[in-house]
Image (cartoon, rainbow, N blue to C red; front, side, top):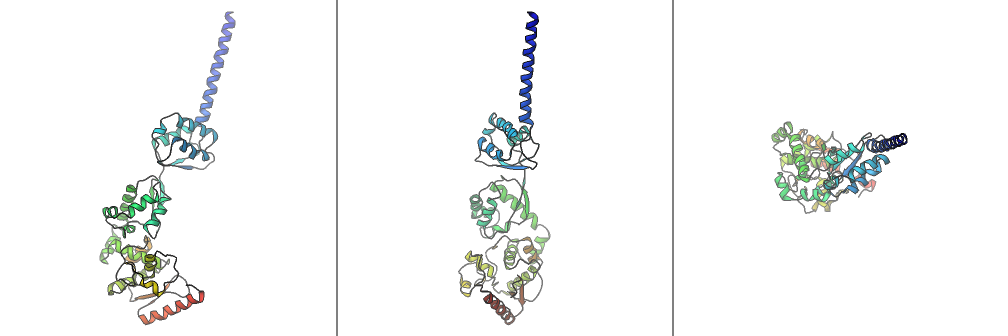
Length: 344
């Protein structure tokens, strides 16, 4: 009898050990297996509206079945739902549920590259950035159109776009509006510090004025090689007190950027941005100036030209003239080419 009891005890022991082994095996399978399916890293974006269920739902499409089961168990049977950390999280192949869970719980997010676009208006800039950051476009637009906020940064709502330098910056997706503006101001100061600031001062221009003129030049041509020539022409006009007479400022005043031709009646548009009716620079940039445009102003070609007109071959470059009579000939050739193509 004792032998049978001893035998039975061993059987029960083996069964218990076997059961524990199975449980440990399952735990290892679900907790050590890769969360991400496939061989490519995936990114999950968690914002302020997310719950533990929505976080699971966001990860599920890129996760393996076993890895997702392990991660879901960790998320649901912990305090994670009480303190969800926003951010852009990188899930790499081989990362197990425990690794991913710790990353989410501790807010160990990955940074991203943010490229500032050469947007034409603060509203458009806000819309573009709103698609790239956790910030919604309305929050960004409200800040850029707030006189108080702009004044705190040293600008107004007409000049705030001069603070943005269209470069690529490494940032966090969930940065606040305060963080975004502070970072852009810091990058602006870094961009201008040194030679650019010195050149602008020698030209008796502020960085805002340089950006304003550069924005007009950018809209005049996409040909970077020609931009210093155009800059020289506009600077000659400013020195002589002549109106800039820049067609892109009319488009900006009307907010009709698709216009192919500026007719005489449009030159009567009542706006401080109308450089046909108002002398000097407009109140602020008509777009976020490109770096090439800014450097073109700072390195303008010294010449005697006062006029320019788009070439009749539609190459995107211009014919320059020192006299009005010569300019009229250039303008006539261009108008003829427009008419022949039926451009209105």
